[in-house]
Length: 164
Image (cartoon, rainbow, N blue to C red):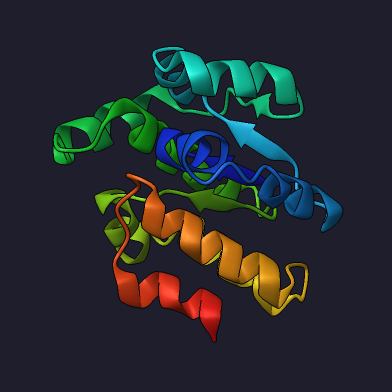
């Protein structure tokens, strides 16, 4: 299971416009998921929401424990609802020993060691796909250029991994 935060969905559908990233996850046996909070955030972005509805193969998981959500939102008030819910869903999956990864692009990634959850960002997900040879060298070059042209902020040294 890959549990996506809002920023990753926006990046894939609206910024770099490369839904093949979702397809590769599915080819490797991962279910694509978002939380209800992420869904609510995506509805605020009409372009991305249209892409999400059109894609249709991303499930809404209701594994966000209310106590976990309350605890994390009080402890980390700088995180938005989607990030908190994705981390809580990850903690739920961790406890059930299911195969999962939380895809979060913001400061919440820094909590992965503290919470002991599997977290990566959008570029980390793409680099994983590159390591599987699921993306060609040309596709990686194309994605690199799309990241440079997008408003999606990522450190240049991170996206340069696409060119190696």
